[in-house]
Image (cartoon, rainbow, N blue to C red; front, side, top):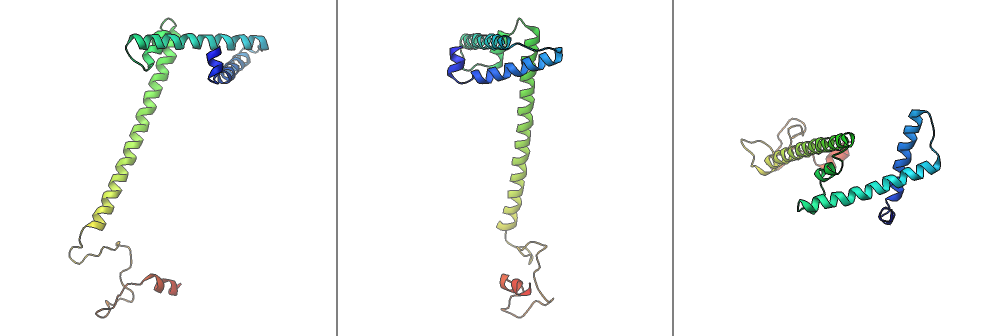
Length: 163
């Protein structure tokens, strides 16, 4: 258990074991003695250390430096329920990654489309007298085009004066 204590994960393991034990005791209508809880924590800690060593050995045998879900499946291959839980977790993780990737892709597509619209509106020359002003922006005030040299559009000072 020295490795678990050394990296600070002992408290997390203890908490997780306590929660599982509490749920199981509640479901069974009983309680666990504190000594039984400590023993369960020790068993889980030792099991995790053995699993970590085995996973490292399997990845090394496969000439990999990264431990993958395949290595974990090999560790629990003799326990059908544990194997099913590992496979379910892997599928859930893949599904979540796929959904997150789809959301990122959709967001990136929307951002590209909006950037293209902005580029198209700001970068192209006006055609056939069209203004670069947005269509819903008022272009003139009072209905007349004004005299030569006069601007028929309101500037910020004029708008503030109206308010």
